[in-house]
Amino acid sequence: MRKQIAAANWKMNLTLHQGEKLLKDITGAGLQLKPNHQAIFAVPFPYLIMAKNAVSKTANMEIAAQNCYSKKSGAYTGEVSAEMLQSINIEYCVVGHSERREYFNETNSILAEKVNLCLQNNITPIFCCGEPLEVREAGNQNQYVKVQLEESLYHLDKEQIQKIVIAYEPIWAIGTGKTATTAQAQEIHQYIRTVLADKYGRDCANEISILYGGSVKATNAKEIFEAEDVDGGLVGGASLVADDFIQIIQALKS
Ligand code: PEP
Image (cartoon, rainbow, N blue to C red; front, side, top):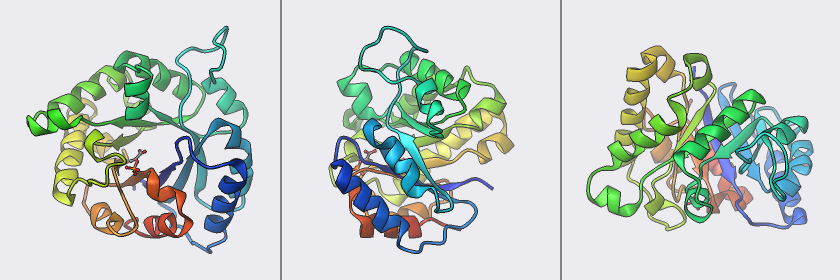
């Protein structure tokens, strides 16, 4: 049974103290996550070890890095490698968030390198894809996302692709308060699963968690997560408020 995941993306927010308090409030809320449910916190690099320790006693809560570099190691001042993340037991890494694509010029081929390095280091990539507004308005979102998948993931074999979590995040919905409707989310999630099934087979595609991201809130999470092919969400703003993110975790479907 594929995992249902509520993934928090703190981005470049919160001090160490604020981050500790947020995790304390969430882990202390007495949530009993079902075996196929998972809460993941993508925190800034300096907080990874603190966050690992903070969730260590709570079942089904994990920590993710928000990024890693596309090279194995070497003279890349300021960068963090997948191997470094593995050395502190980080199990997930967000790869290809639209903010990284836009502000740091991360291309589909760079992201393919990052995906490879994560897998080589036993880290599950949370691979982000999604179209800008003009592509959606032209009705070309399916083709746009298909190319992102083809160019960053299609070199993987069947065993490797099953280790990927996909996050579909329409750029026009990220941080804008504008959420895709449940029907829009289901339509493109179903399309993504069909594309994966065409390449890797239906059984394989059915095992891959596909998260929705873009202004998910405590008030709309349940409705969006109910859609058949939506396996939870990647959440920015609302993940910074303990009560909101707790409700989002509770909105995961069985
Ligand atoms: C995100 O950062 O991936 C995101 C979806 O942000 P927000 O929930 O704030 O739209």
